[in-house]
Amino acid sequence: TVVKAQLTSIIQEKLPFSDPISIVNSALALAVASDFISDIETLLEQLTQLERPAMRLETFEGIKGCTVINDTYNLDPDALQYALEYLL
Image (cartoon, rainbow, N blue to C red):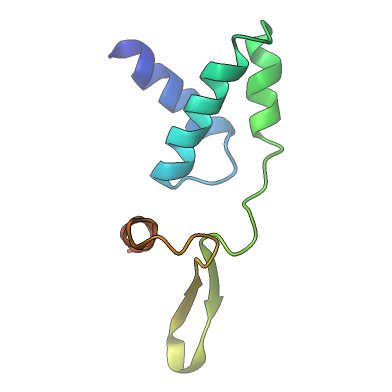
């Protein structure tokens, strides 16, 4: 819908990371928070303060030009698939 597209666009502008799972999770959190906090601008500003959890989509330069992806935050095979799709 138009509202969903607009919300996604706003979240992508504010969120300090851009993987699809984080965007969806942020949209859900924002929707729930808006039931308790009426100032949507404050909620959106808080998105800019978020930090990625440790061991979630961390990338490091490996040997011989390889990229090491540390996504051990979640050992779910689906999460690994999403991480690889995002990084590729």
